[in-house]
Image 1 (cartoon, helix red, strand yellow):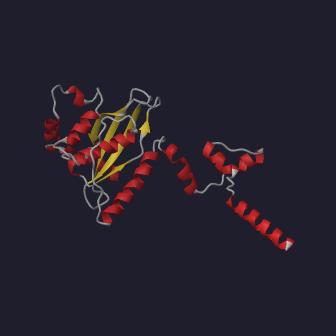
Image 2 (spheres, one colour):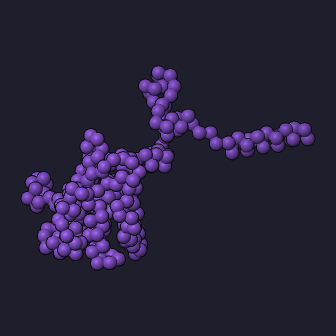
Image 3 (cartoon, one colour):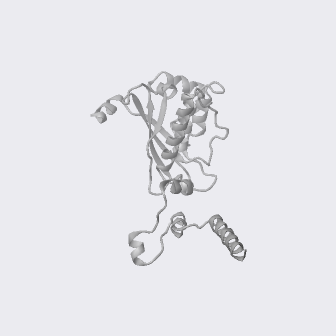
Length: 235
């Protein structure tokens, strides 16, 4: 009987061991952003996290990089596509805060383009109003005295910029930033047909006055790339 009691105690100890969570030092190091160990270990590298673990633990840091937003938006867009395949397209909702200091430069590009695509949701020319709200003091919109969203919408619809209201899908390419981090340069591709080559490129220049919590990324200019330039690039 004493042996049986000992076996039960050992089994309980084993259960306790199973419940104990041991986090590898390498996982802690990877999350903190540095490696430890002897010289040989540093050279060889002792960080052994899987891609899934890295994504889960570091996704907030990814948003701070120039291309991180594009990667995450791509994943979100895949989710939206799957929703559409299920017959449940995601309902567009106009942004409540314009401009929004919580958005990255890339997110501002995405927000403006989505607003223009749904220009009359929930009210007429709400999308152009969002563009006005995200336009910097140095933009052409702010320098046209007395220009209204309705007037600007009519102008856009009579030019090649009408694609801003009529595209099917948006792909935001990786952005570039100025040395001081106060200028951002993004190219967005607006899908206008079924062929991979059926797209129009829009070049965005954005700026911010600083990096404080209340500083916003604003649009200095957006420029449709001429068709001739797109044809030359495809060659």
